[in-house]
Image (tube, rainbow, N blue to C red; front, side, top):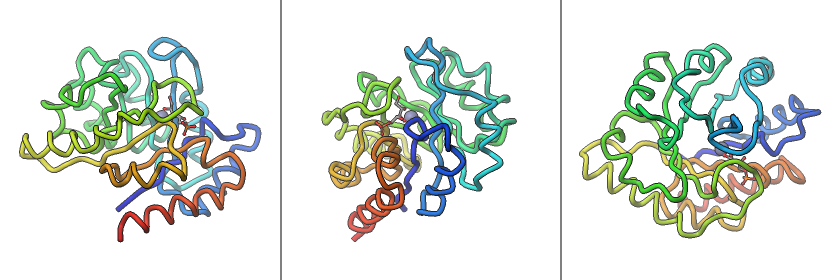
Length: 221
Ligand code: DX5
Ligand code: ZN
């Protein structure tokens, strides 16, 4: 029911394949891959060639978070390099419905992300078409930032919106500043897919992931 998607933005890229083995072995459910374009967000991270290379070293599904302006332009490229779930920002798409439709037509699962200042309401006419909503709990662009507590209300609002629209609630992913200390309240708030970068990759990856799994078990009780 609950899933962990470690964000490789916080990994040691010099030994990325070893770190991917470690997260897979420790029981991560997918791999979160943050693609930044230097325009929608200030930084540039990595793109298709890196994804294509790491596709060969793990069987885990690739959860690709595009922090890219007008991502419609690159949907087929991300399919070709191995994305399983492609998430675009509502704020970055002039034609969000077309973008979501094309991602699905290309055979990927589709997510829509909203920044901290973006109201859940922007999802009203698209919520029935998506597999996942990504609630950003920091402003996108950097790893290692502080969780914004006010975002705890958004998973419940997403659930309410789905109910109002009479559609099944998509998965609710949260991303940014999530640690073993705050994950419990975040799960309680209604999120079921947790992205964690720093709190998975700093220190002992195996122990960190075991900590998240334990939090998932406690939340399911
Ligand atoms: C932020 C990215 C996050 C980031 C999370 O723009 O979308 O996925 O890697 O990193 P932590 O868990 O360190 O906040
Ligand atoms: Zn992310």
